[in-house]
Amino acid sequence: MYKLQLKKIQKIKILIITFFTLVVNCAYCLSTDSEQDIEIEANTAEMDDIKKVTIYRGNVIVTQGSIRMTGHTMHVYFDKNNDMKLVVMDGTPATYRQLPDDSTVYDEAEALRMEYYALKNYVILIDQAKITQEGTKLIGERIEYDTVLSKVKAEGKASTTAKGEDKEKVENKRVKIIIKKKK
Image (cartoon, rainbow, N blue to C red; front, side, top):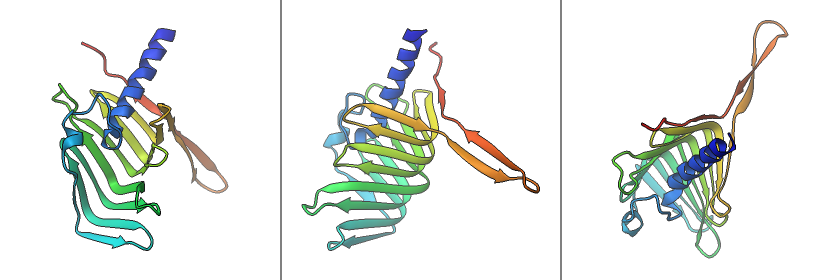
């Protein structure tokens, strides 16, 4: 039982590590991706050197090798030394996909909002977050990953809806993990 739980935790760690290969090089990514140019397409791009932010709007597409991210808006924030400190991709949903080495199946992720804190090596998927790797899925309202400590935290969401007079129903959206059975 303990070994099974440990294997599930290890599979989730691998799943999330793979997702963040755009910002952290790891053994699971296509080895040539990090050597490729980063290409950003959008309907508009706006740079503000005083506020240290660049905003891409309208059908934003970021590619680097097999990596592809999409959303409707992407904000890139810089610190006083012009080092990237935060990237925020919003979409309906914002998406990410990458082809790992020796695989024909893409790793994928999506959420309404994806945030990458470069200085802290911390990534957060917010609202309807989902990560898929080789059939294994991690689903939650919020998924956080500390790339330095290799810690994953996934949360569900409790919502309250009104029903009738003075009656409320609390609906719990729980974290869900689906592990594909090996054949």
